[in-house]
Image (cartoon, rainbow, N blue to C red; front, side, top):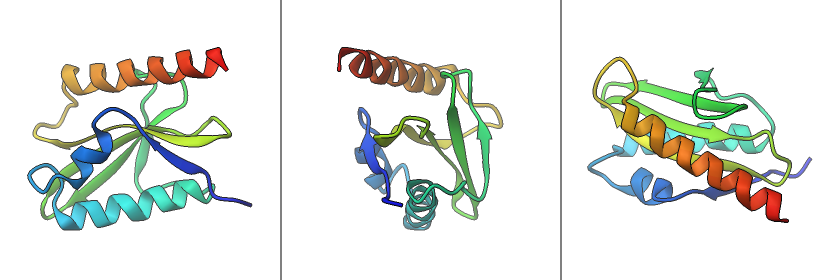
Length: 115
């Protein structure tokens, strides 16, 4: 089976590469988890994140460097859409982070409907 390509949405790729947002350890782990998803496997630690949109999931990376999250949707055959990458500062996900991911999810749906 061919790996799905990753489609980085908005600032997600820039954010995951930003050393102020994602530490090198967190970035390495996020890359590993995304590789698993590309191969059709589940990430090691995730939860559904349907508040953003149906089929959306959240990769949870909890390491000594902090709590990091990658929100994505992989239910479409053409790609794994990475909607938002961020470092959590509190136990609950902020409304701003949810809104960013939801806006990008809606944009994916709109683009797919135009094809």
